[in-house]
Length: 61
Length: 395
Image 1 (cartoon, rainbow over the protein chains, first blue to last red):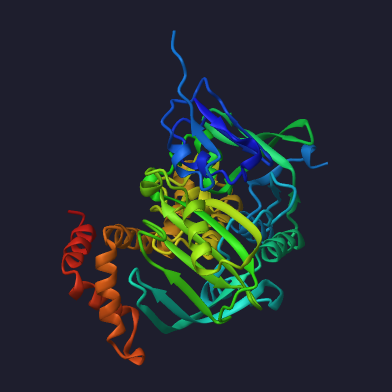
Image 2 (tube, one colour):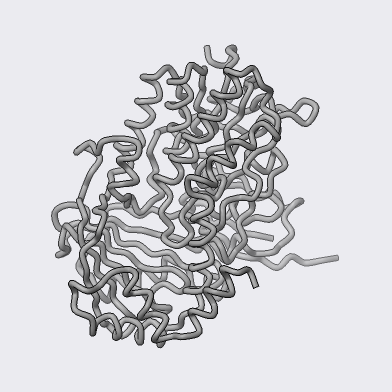
């Protein structure tokens, strides 16, 4: 699961450009990630220029 | 109200590629609607703002209001600190994109286009596999508008293309993670581009200092996604550089963004849909410059739309193929070469760069040229020639 530090985001959309499953939506000053679609590839985490995104391990039952 | 109208073309995105499409298509007699998701055209800036005189003049005579600095000289700094300077054959400019983009939109409107800001497009209307309009949201009210052509000018995100079935995702190694700060209170020469090349400063990319008038500059860098994977962000690299080189500077603006340094998309069109600018990966993959090439793709797409409409032809994928052909002739083929050179240069480590820089520094300034630079690069690193030959022949 990807965690967003929303107040740090500049909404540049470069995470959207590398996302292989199109699960990120960036509006003017809103960023949302659809956890249902996200495949935890972390490409968005790597490419973010200002460390807004981080990968969080999720517990499995 | 625009929500109730029908248009020949709807352009998603109000950057230079989108508004150039709108200007050319409107001048050709087409009705055009430009939908921009942000509240301002030209803001926030996501660009180093550099353009060559030739690239700008292809479209417009430079307006002094757009230009922050005129550049006629370049300085490269190698990892070991060796500095190489030479004059540019073609002068360049640092633009003020806020004014430039705004004026491009204004020119499109003067030709008859309609521009709407704060209009967020969140899907396409598709009928029998043909894109025939867009869906979106404007001030919390949903809208659906039909059009003969939809133009995806939505930048690096390029979601319009994905919705239309095109593969627009940028591979991590072909995406540069970029950040730039406009700083004040520093000594810079106002006529000189400065580049810093090292894996220590900007791995898989470069760091730039672009003067912006009096004691001010855009200082930025881009790192390859390939290296960004190692966990150090573009911001950390830039902060370290500023702390080392300009510890006393004031930061007036910070902008960030992704730069797709890729070959142009193999498929830039679908039935009823054309992609232009960053959305179609039209950035020069070697330099990362994308303003004039984006505008050129917008122009080529508009010419295709005009031709098809005037000849009463349907905007099928096969008919829109003429846009792809125009683009490949204008820039696309060159960009494929630049991409291969980028791939070869990408393999240089700091020792290679130092050897090349020292070789060039030994050449008298008046004898320096890009051709000379390349021949020295090859003599200092002979495997470069093999790399380039292999890449050019596709082996």
